Length: 112
Length: 116
Image 1: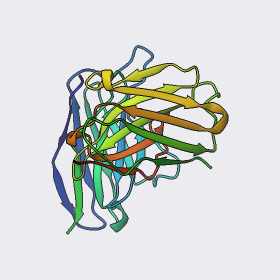
Image 2: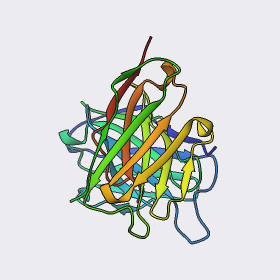
Image 3: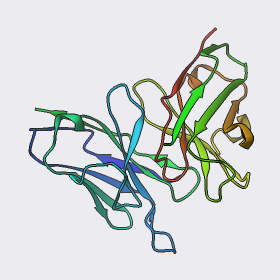
């Protein structure tokens, strides 16, 4: 199975400042079609996960452009610029390249 | 507007079979490229993908549970189903269904408790 390793496990951010979350996969997520199958989700307290970024760097519908995704074949970053109160929750990276799909353990974002 | 909603028994006993239903709207499972997946989350823990079913009835299972999982669909009634046999306390979790296009739409989840 592809292991997804996130860091840090938690981050505390002052509103208005930026935050970065890292995710590393145990295997390249770059498909031969040129698409990198890493996804980012946010699970707000008491809610279902919601898609933020798909295929490494594409912003999901309705997601503020304060969120951005980048990376290589195995190392990925979610950046949140100008953090707001509504960004609080647990962020998960996931790989949808191969069976079984797997997710990182999550990064909890809190406000200072 | 895409919506999904899970339903299930709430509580069941060890060794029983868990039957879950995902009722959705805003898309059709007969449309090329569409699919529904199931993901679960034990309380306070991370996400575990279980299975996907696609428009062409192709099915994929997590090998760690494959022998216990059966996914199916009823295209006419816009539903997808998941059965898990021989449950035990480790299957206690919130179960979500989601569209397989990157899991871009999720249901609200249904809590399932396995307890004697």
